[in-house]
Length: 416
Image (cartoon, rainbow, N blue to C red):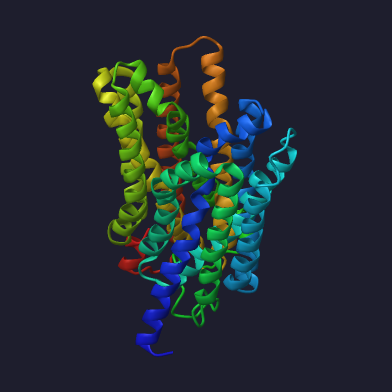
């Protein structure tokens, strides 16, 4: 393949891969669908909310399974299988609106999460292989597409729900999802020599391409997992409360809503900007800045005047985007590109634990009569714990370099 054709191919993969991953942001606007589902079926709020939480658990499993298929066979197979499951799951939601929520749990929760996970990790991993010196940029573009879904599709879904109802909306979105992954599957493929240790496509951290089983036996994996888990807690405890907390502190509802919208924009922006910058200045350095800002924002929510709350909300949303955008390329740099799809699936276990842990923290604290500021203090502590694990990860990486006495190029060091 000529250089010009090669360049065209990688950008087609990036564009249509991002288009498919764009729709994996669908569960994040479930709150818009939830009232319509409850009205039609009679579900309680807790029953309806379970659809959202089940998704996160199976999403991680889909990442692991899809990554394994992508690494062992091809990304096209993973995208076709995952895309088919994703599309069918949403289309079946139109038939799952019954008095018992069990079928919706299976379709919107379990099936959708699993199918999305297969698409998500396969596309990210493949895109990174086509941009060996710019893995942060490649993964950042893909993850940014996921973050933009709510901004563009929330108003579209709201209009469709009010005019056509929830069943028709599921069918329309399902068809759009099907179109997205079909286009992605046409173009997606691994570059030549992508899975050969000596190939010039793989961007290596320290020369070793870890399999998933090798990875989970290292301290680095657990430090990385803990960094993600605790780093996400501040956003996950603030996000459901972001609008009500501002209004409770006397901030106008229009300003509170604008802050949430601005937060969503910053969330999407940092998903691309931070990992792209990290390609040049280093990923761990960028993550340190993100965690310091997240901790500071949570502390300010406790001690600063009420007017500062709006700024803090936007900052925490931006930090969340920075973490989500940085971890795919950081994982690949530490553990290699050869098994990056499945490896990142295991790292994403941190997201599942954080998603389930954050509401447990909030409900426990508020349920015992403590003030919301206690929740925010815990968020600040979690950001500090994440920073500590990041330092341990950095030290472990340096220790392994020294123990192997391996000469590493300045560029490889900078990439991490």
